[in-house]
Picture (spheres, rainbow, N blue to C red):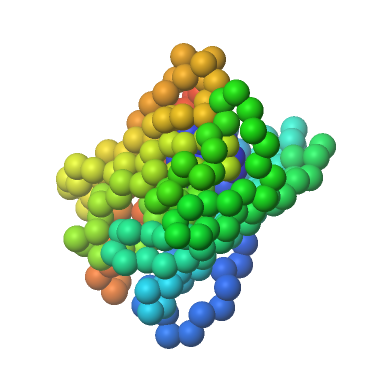
Amino acid sequence: MKQFLKILGVCALPLAMTAPQMAAADGTTDAVFSVAIRGITAGTLTVKGAENGGAYNASGVLQSGGLVGLVAKVKYTASSSGRVSGNNFSPSRYDEKADTGKRKSSASMTYKGGVPSVSDYVAGPNVVKPSTQKGTVDPMTALYAAFRDVNKDEVCELDVKMYDGKRRSQVKLATPRAEGDMIKCDGEYRRLAGFSPEDMAEKARFPFNLFYAKTADGRYRVEKVVTHTLYGNAVMKRK
């Protein structure tokens, strides 16, 4: 999932975890995507979330599968919660667990006054200090913000700065336009700070496209994502 989030800011190695139960939600999202890189099935990404009275809870799981799953069993789970108003998110907590098959790890961030505090923060030459990241959102919140079901006036309306405990990046959606019976958005994930000079020289911008379809209740949901990654073309399709 980390590569997924690093490459799209919201799309690179999947997430799937049951979202917290919420009653009388203002809006809910329950999406499962198949992920293929260069035409090879790589796994699934599940994103779930609910909004109620200005609060949100979101969770996800990235699970390797297909031919990739035969080579490496990888699973990342994440959850986040906080406040939301339109497209403006203010996280209060973020938790992540990773199992690469060789190593298990966990990390969390909490927020006070919009400033993140990282459970496993270690200073380094390229690491961005949490105290400088007021107003940023965590990776799960960024993923949910990009993949949640929205009203028509919110389609392609997103611009968030993301901080993962070490690095700062940006996720943007823009330029909605009709493509067949769907709406196509131009997206970009941009590395901003905390990356090594080698990473920045390799690639700093990752363009992608999101495709929305209208639902039976008149809202819009992401049906497909197409992006160019360091590993080749990647396509995510909603199941």
